Length: 304
Image: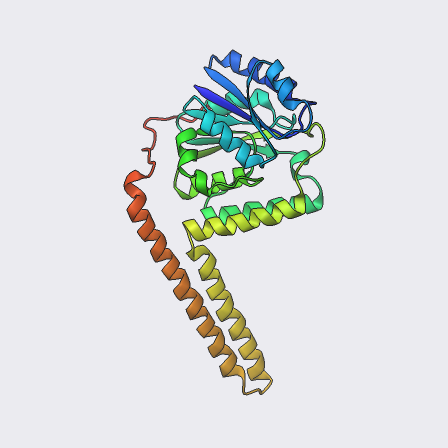
């Protein structure tokens, strides 16, 4: 049973088409489902058109952000599994059955976007590559798409991390980080990505900076040594290089420079290990209540 959440902000041009297509696809699967449209303070007829399409509509009095809309949807969802998809026509809704075939073996199934519309301009491509490299480094897992807006996941798993999941544009990125770093099972299905209907609300520069900030915050919460140890190594490396240059130049500052860099590395390392100790203590206190599910037995990946 599936609760499909559609966050909307001024999507009057495409909301009814999205709902109709979703119904056609899910009706054919035989899945028991509900559709919830979360109108996040739209100034157009989005909410009225969604109600006219016969689906449940949650209205926010003002725009609160993409993640906040999805959290409202999760709080009001009736079923164990949630699916999310944008109403802008950019995701292939007809591929939902391909995601659902991996349920319930995986805790989350993500539609990993591909194609020119996904990678976009050179600046956008560079930002996406940097984001994916950073997320893969943090999690230790190859992540083909960290912030896809089309996915299926266990509601209780997401709600267990809801206070650490962004209420803004980075909802999907932080949900991905939370599930991977808490060792839940996540699967990716490659899909095409289309040009959206209407104007995008994403501000690439500001939202990219906020995403990187949120990733660093997530690393500090889940695995702080991945932040502090690279800084330690960088301090020692830079100090050794500068010290060597001063030594070759005949300066008497070589030993001082190396000593200061080593001291900085020791201080940063000490803070890092203290943060890791606090994390392990927190895990030990919360582990009995943590959501854990054993690996599926005798599960065969569809198509193999």
